[in-house]
Length: 231
Image 1 (spheres, rainbow, N blue to C red):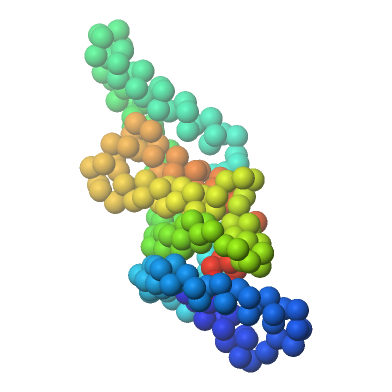
Image 2: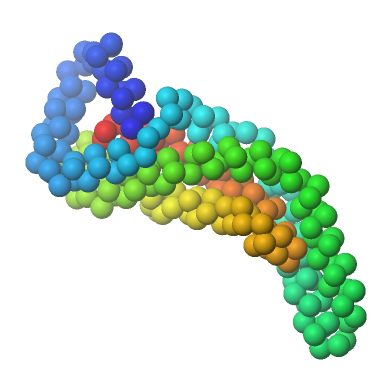
């Protein structure tokens, strides 16, 4: 990974002089040397997706970009109001209680609201799509680290950093991948129009994405640091 390469380069350029830290590194290396299968799996998954030179910085910068919808109350309400309203109108139209013009107007209104933000959503989608595969790879690497049982306390301390409020980091990163996959549904024109008409889909997914950022971005740098140290 780029984080591992950066840490190795730093070690060569500015060798550690603290005896305690040096001994800690040696103990970590000694234990990892015996975990052949773990090292092979970590290496294979680490080389699975090529990373751009500035991938780490761009990921952190993206995490702190201004948000489009979260945590505005109006969008929090719209996420629930429009799906319920649209489905209700369609059901009542089928039951001949509402005229079909009611769901038609409701669906057009949904598309209109999404359309107001399409340009900004498209820009954000391009940015996160480029990071999706890298984040998925980091999730797999984190899961490999979490699954191991280490004896040396130095490795256990690193492993402990991958916990966020008792939730494992791999699960958190996998949730992000799931959100990005849901956002990609809009690339299918038919599915995109249908989902946005019924459930303002693009706004739903960007809201979920921005909520994820707010909840976990403070820990993301620590998780990346752990990946870099193991690498």
